[in-house]
Amino acid sequence: MCSKLLQGVFVFLALTACSVKEDRSGCACQLQVEVCCPPGPQAVRLCLGGGPEVTVERDTVLILSAPGPEVVLEATSGALPGPDGCYRIAEGEEQPPLYLFSTRVDTRGETAAVTVRLRKEYCLLRLGFKAPADCGLPLGLRVVGEVAGCGPAGEPLPGAFSVETAPDAAGRAAVRLPRQRDASLLLQLLYKDRVMRTFALGEYILAAGFDWEAPSLQDMAVDIDIALTNLSLSGEVEPFTEQIDVLI
Image (cartoon, rainbow, N blue to C red):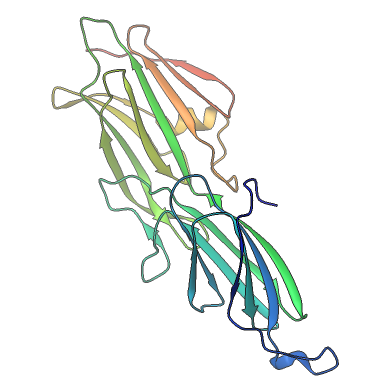
């Protein structure tokens, strides 16, 4: 069952009547789909076997009419695919809050059931900075990478990724990252219209034990103490601290 209370059962498409004793090759299967929505306000869009799309906005159960002997059930939330089925990121933008699900369902019988739990296809990187009062915080941050989206199954797509942000008054910022193929991510500190320092962010993330191949990606926090020249990573990984040299 879903983590939230199921709030209704909806019937989508009429079921074609078929006797158990008959040849079921042309009969529909009654498919029960339990949908567990990811956190956040975005809706979940489901597509059964390339048919019409169904949209749900809360945990629920659908009863669908599915052809046999097998059907593909896909679900997505947080972004729409392009014409080729891929989710591409324009340079200068961050990864959308994308969740995906896909499975093949055996529909040879009268009934079948499947639970939809979408995979989280992004890592929310939280950035925090500490600095001496007389030097101030970086005016800007840039994350640079070599993955610019993902395919229909969540596989990383090669391409230029670059997004800029800036710390708030408390020294905090956040960027959503796509699933990575390697350790090529870089974090650049921008100060007075120049790159003050470049960190091998991807290397630090891997050293902390982060798993880019996990079914659902975890979030991560990076703290940079400019006064002590330390970079620390935390989250659902092993704590990791690296001493660095930062000149302002």
